[in-house]
Image (cartoon, rainbow, N blue to C red; front, side, top):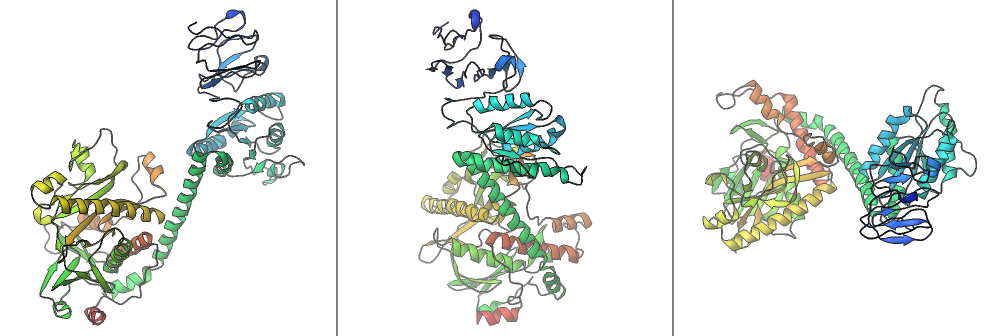
Length: 584
């Protein structure tokens, strides 16, 4: 053999990159030579040869059991010293047996019969999410007690960190025997049976003195307890437990916001019926303004060195106003105000005051003709979206090269800046180099806005995640004031300018190929598409009240999710008189 044969007291040898020889020089197994432990076999590379009386294990998964019995069970390969040699699909031990540090933890799940297999698979699936291996074994304490003890003995010799889980009901001797035969923690997770009105759980609840398996009836709960125990000395498992707990908290927060926003439905309906909404404004005299400009949602009044921004309740699509959504303007205006305040440490903004829930008074700025779109995921359905372009074969988008094999809704390795020109310049994706060459911005101004955009987005993602949301993508607009200071303008991280997904369910849905959970606002647009021709019909049908009210509720829900704050439906109504009074 290339590196020679090493004797282990006549019991066979193990050689680097060669073959280990059993009794009579019969070939045995291949692995890497590393370290000798006299009298008990040989430790190798990522493998270990265990005490010869108990069998041995190698990284390619070969193990012998005592007196020919299976060692951690699998297909027989070759006998040695009259002892059956068995192969397993993965390495059972990966480091020096004297220490379990660095070894991947395992949970042997022992069941009394195959009838418990489905329950055990649920535990194994939950353990996998924590990065813990699960070995499913069948060994009845009543019918084959010697076999059960043999299996336990083999695992006791396995240096991997472990927690045993026993799954047996009615007379649960398995968990008791298991707990007495090992010093490792034992969790009992008996299946429920109504054959005796549930009293068959008594044997799992009442154990003799000195026998102390923990009792957890839920399979996922048993996996969680095992993960908490193993996580004491394993940071990866500990982090996985913390991640699960965070998702649980996020889910509760999302569900609570759903409940509280639903409770506001009567107020939303009352405002809709009373027509206490803003669709058009004529406040030039109120603001002392010289000019009014109207966008899809906001009306802007120019008053010299400042502007008044009135965020209306207009809901637009197909280049038309479809309906007035109660509280929408308040949601957009106040959520922007909340974010503007939160992000002052990153970049100055244009806000001077917010005198009314629908009105922002802002410092007048000259806007740059570029929208700074930042994306953390590859998604979207519009012609300018990253996924649409990628799915059509585009690999260089806005000057960024994207690799092959990306999947819709996948998280990008890092956040990316994908600017677009503003609508008056064609509303199309554009690279940083093209922005500079076309003189839309100077290099210095672009660099400052790009840096602020990436910092704003990273901060927005962090805050959103604390509230159970994923900030997927958004747009920022910037302008220069009279003193040449670059300021964040327009809006920031609102339900209209940003895409948000529900965080607790994202990973699971993505693995299943399902669309992310979100607070959808498209259903009203789809109703018009299905009930008229919104591009050609001169007059559109009135939107159903229930749909308008529901959309209002969803806007409020998004405000509560984004800010983590309650929404005030008793705020000043959006009437011209109320706005004039607030301004005065």
